[in-house]
Image (tube, rainbow over all chains, first blue to last red; front, side, top):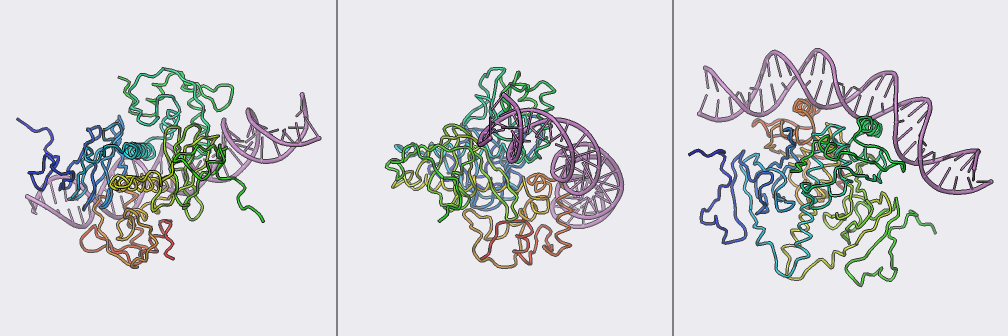
Length: 231
Length: 231
DNA sequence: CGGGAGGTTGATCACCATCAACAACCGTGG
DNA sequence: CCACGGTTGTTGATGGTGATCAACCTCCCG
């Protein structure tokens, strides 16, 4: 019987703690060890005590982006919809404190817990944006940006797995100059890409200027190399 | 007597609410209106109800970067050390809910509040990284990255205003390949920049390979166009 | 000592920022 | 209604910058 991945997941200092009688457990990771993977169920929040971790995300075609470097004193293990949204690997021998999420829940104080989950979602969204900025081509960035405005996509806690209408009319209330700045491009490049998308039939302009008609949302999504698996 | 900035800050629907008898206040912003500015005291967390906001950061030399676009359902107004770390401007007519931070504090439940503040700090750190990726030159990015490893800089809640020793020996436990990926550069470019920094005397290599000696921290900080005002 | 990962340095070229000129659109006020 | 100016968007020409390819070197580990 073989173990598929020979990198062990955890290296718990005291084996007796493996079923967490306490809310905090100290773990020691060797260099290269994986703390968690993208899409794993998010049971813990981790706090780095010593060493350093990297968080990385991957595009469907394999392009990888390190979205954060986690040094002592910082947290990781954030989730959106109770799943991790990136992989976490130790860059050196690293000690972390694992905080059980279950133990963080305080009965009767739902507001803060809700807030905490929303903050985590926003961190995950920032990571996605970092992936976009670091790995995607200008065309992909613009397409990804446009997807934000399609109802059902991009809203908080959107899994983007739900069936969505194939076409949509969207309104972009942002100038190309601001879009360009946000995407790390020049205004001219954004304009050229918008023209290209129109020429290729991915978007059409409605009469009222900044309104766009998108005939095939999935096509735009694929054009933007997004993780949209409308199963 | 003149008012310096004629753009009013808030446009409170009901003027009677201006001293918040409740924890939530609804505000309506006109296009171009400023919700808050970088370094303002962070009294509120905002939730966008309709419209859209941009968050922007600025480098000492004036380069600006939009670090996030905030759509309905998302939050903004995050702080590090109780101050906002970016400016927030409405891109269109926008309605937000202002949540008083004071009201979020629940007596006896400090753990979650602490967690919430740390999550906010991490979001602010992500914004800073987005500014780095969007506006800084490759040289500045590498210098900024190196600054992370200097004791006293880059740690959570570090205001980077405290007096720090002028020189330091740091250890970079990360391969140039990973540094390059994280900074959106090629490995070769990172290597060339490291050589350049050595040639210019900003850093020196210690015997044990990945250890660097930095003779003048402030110089490196300036080289990275960071907001380090060691007053 | 040998192998492999990690780092250095040079040569080349594609891509996108920049500059520039123009066009479309949106207010405002006559 | 049109005239006008300013903002925003479009399109072309050009050049600099950093990715890429390639060869070599260094360090570390067995």
